[in-house]
Image (cartoon, rainbow, N blue to C red):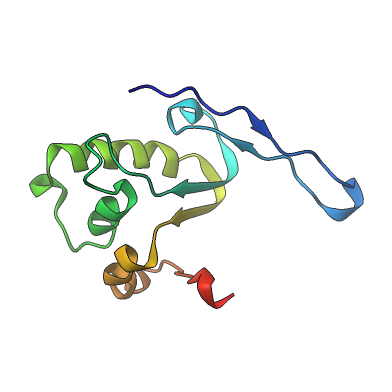
Length: 120
């Protein structure tokens, strides 16, 4: 099922307050573009049985091998790669804590900064 890219634009409040415009879009809509920051939100994949970011975190953390991943996980990883190569300054993944916590130690060991927003 192909969903249209959302057309959401944030309005700049006061230029004196360093507010920047942001735009929500799909990973596919960002192909070939560069951005200062990208947030990749966890979603259910097409079958509705797996969460894409959760599956890809296993590969990024080194706890799973890409060559042994299911084809659906490899496809999700390819999409995430496209999104992850767009930002120039900040890349963030948003995943539910219960699915992400098994990767936290390995991700921090690889230099990632992991923030639990429940504590903020």
